[in-house]
Length: 427
Image (cartoon, rainbow, N blue to C red):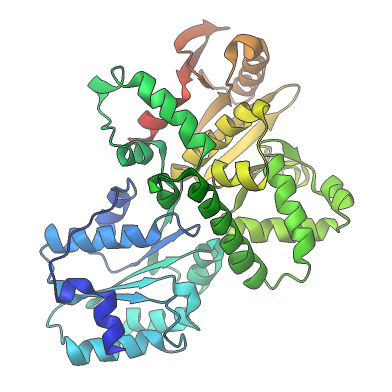
């Protein structure tokens, strides 16, 4: 354990400098670093959770002047350690060899690998007020079930997704400033196509070899699917689940009727519901409900399904040339998901892609790649939703069309996807 601790914590013996791509999520986490609550970083595998932990460590050392020896990092998914009791063992060895004299900042990466970690953290939280805890995990149930039931009121949780478009541009060396957006417009539009066609996973973006990019995406999918879904949820019929995920990936952004899907795949409707939840817990897919005032109607109506990464969708679910509109919509959904918890769709005679809710504020958003051929239809869906929810402003996200217009006394704002992604990431 001593050797592992020194390996996991290089800042104890050498000067540490964070060399990754700065994450937008850091600004959300920073206000919580000196509070008592456990900080939880949750998200899909390979999205950059560990890197964000290292970025927080760098901030503690450089900006907060915390002694590097007061920072303890535990790599819970290291196959060289026994998972049972690893936290207590690491703390004992840490005190023995480092013997910190003031507040300790403890980071535990991939905590779901540790047996009974919830009870251990609750004990440490309650009995050691001078120990601040940060954890990361790769399953949504870590946020909704494990933390919520065992550590209620003791944690602040943040979700990390693969790179946003702004982070992608930073990785490509493009500095985002208001006075340079027009200057870099053509480059940004080209990079947007690359972003939605290839992947938003950090290591895929930074990989130069195109063949290796595709292999990485496949490896990521296999790791998430078999480790975080099949193994963790103890799925007894993985072949049927594989058919289901491929169906979802081929039909992103389309309404999904679980009863019809069950018949198609020779499953029960209950199994489709259970499998979909397992895929969502692993952050592979997301489902949103039709917005109805009756919760029962929300549950029984078809869901719309989106994928964590368009790169996974394109390789595992196959991509067709006419799918650019679906990729645009999926990209908008993931960007909304970064900051907004409640997202629905609306459909009556026509459909509106997204109705978002932040507190009491509702917003209506339509996504249309080719506005010249679909403007009338998209407007009908948007205006119908705006009328239903008494909204005065609606948004249509386009390929490159930008303007504002008044229709029936309501303001319609058209914004290119590349600009919407950049500006929304600054909020």
